[in-house]
Length: 176
Image 1 (cartoon, helix red, strand yellow):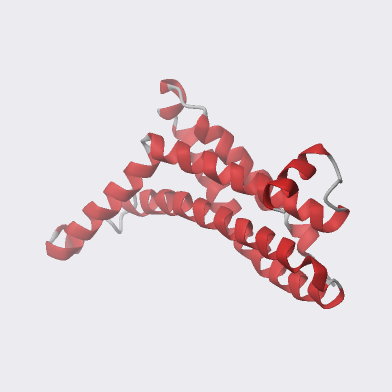
Image 2: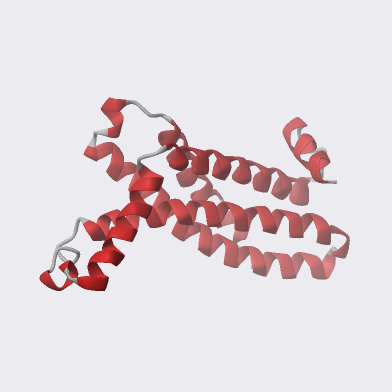
């Protein structure tokens, strides 16, 4: 049974919602703990589900290629953009996971204040803040939403054909 089509929409919804929230930057929202918590949940949960969806996509790929080898290039391109989307959102999710760790009691343990641990924590903090608090996070979110859109368009072309709708046609013609 191919469960990829059943699962694929969950990470899309979570990650697109996160990306929209990330691109809406105001001082009031940026200083809201609730807003940050919601974004954290969306990107972490969406990324975890994206990994599950990638694995089910690999199964779907094998099933589909056995009956439709003519779709190989289209499926590989779809798969590449799905991987790119997951990678981009993994970078973003990691920045939030690092923040959670740095805010925890474990990062503030006495052993962490010395030598290599302190330097490692400093590097992790720099990475997390560079992504979450600067335009880099917004740029990654935009790149992620673009990759998700292309992935979805190519997925629709696989299932419904390249002329399924005007957007799918444009995306398909960009690559084929």
